[in-house]
Every structure is written in structure tokens, then in C-alpha cells.
Image 1 (cartoon, rainbow, N blue to C red):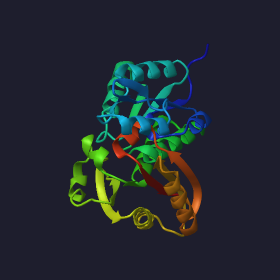
Image 2 (image 1 turned 135 degrees about the vertical axis):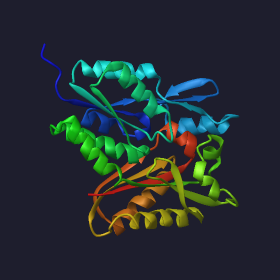
Image 3 (image 1 turned 90 degrees about the vertical axis):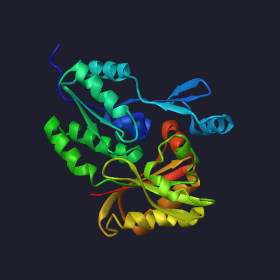
Image 4 (image 1 turned 30 degrees about the horizontal axis):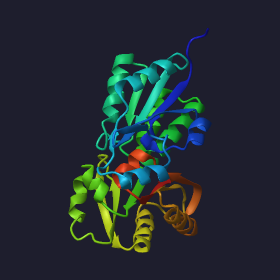
Length: 282
């Protein structure tokens, strides 16, 4: 048996990478979990429709948990039997303890595991993971992937729109968003993930269409409409909003790549129903 060769890319389930995309790019996903009234589901094992049905009927907000230390340790050790190194990209440390869990696991396994903080979530994280997997497949070294990652991370623009801030407030993730909480009856709140990886409010609008339009307008302040860009529309049980956003983006921007991504149960626990746009100028 030869020596391990090549790189393996690992991430957590809050990257919202569709299963087929993970398979296509050889990405290993370690799931977070969500517990509803005592029943626990690994992220990705319960449909969003069933999850929202259960969440709406539950007396308390579901609880989410980062992957246990052992899950990362087991994954890292298994991959190092085949690959020379593992690069693990996680959700922002400001939004979850997943990064610290992965770091602790890496320390226990050895110096062939390299943990990177996306300072983002959902496809803002997932885009970085897929680009790292493409680089690994093309033969890039760990150092080259780290350099690419550092250059890319600050160019990922993501806006998230929420139909309600109730779940965000109940889950304690509201942080800087408190500035927008007053008088939010029928108001949609829009957030981004700031440079430090924490949520930051960027606006609010009355009514869904106004909020969707404001989200697209915000992207236009970050992305040159005439130059090629990669886009993803994310949604949590809001396919109609996703369709509206996809059409608006295609009619306004120079789209090189477009994905429509459904959020997982862990992300949806904190956001409730809503939408998002990720845009990266290429």
C-alpha cells in the first residue's frame, strides 16, 4: 500500500452544500444536529417541510448542536489513511462553536489537518469550500489553497433576508441586529456577515417584494453589474422568493454561475423562513 497522497476537503453541514455537489467535488460533510422536543436529527436527514412542521408545532425553539469532537476526530483520521492532508473549512466562529471543535480535533490528530474559518455560513461558506475542492483537485498544495482561501474569503458577499427575527432572537444569535428590532411589525430584516464573521444589519423593508428588491440592490453595491460573477440564491422553505430573486439577478447581472440552494435545518432554526444571495465577482 502506497503513502497517502493528495488533499481532502472537509466542511460542516451549515455550508448547505447539496449532496450531489459534495459528491461531485469529493467534499466530506460533518453534520451539525438539531433537536426538536427531545428528538435529535443530524443536519440533512430531515426534510425542510417536515422540520418546519415540527418546529411550528413545538413549544420551544429547536436546539442546534455543533458536531461533537469525536465526529471530527473520526473523520480526520479516516481521511488521513488515504490523503496526505485534510483541509477543513467551517462556519464562522462568531456564529457557532464548530470551528473550535474542529481545531481541537485537529490538534489531537496531528499537523496534517488544517482548519480554516470561512467567517461565513450557508453558501457564503459553501462557495469557499467548493473553490478549495476545485483547487485540491487541480493539484494545489496546502499552502496554495490557504493563499487562495485568504484571497477569496473577503470577496464573498452575502445578504440574508428574514421574514421574522423571532427565531434569531430566541436563539440568542441576534447580536448587532438588535438595532433593527424596534417596530418590526410586518418588516423584513436584511443581514450580512461582517468581516469579523458576525451578523450585521444592512436594512429593513415593509413587505416581501420590497425586501427582495432591496436585497438585489444591496448586491449591486458590492458587485459590478457588467462583469462576470458567481451567484447563489439560498432559501428556507421559500421557493417562490428564490425564483423571484433568480430571475431578478439574471436580468440585472452578468451571471457566470447560478445555483439555487435550500438551507438546512440547523440554519433554518435560527433564521425561520427567508432567503439569501451570495455573490462573488470572478
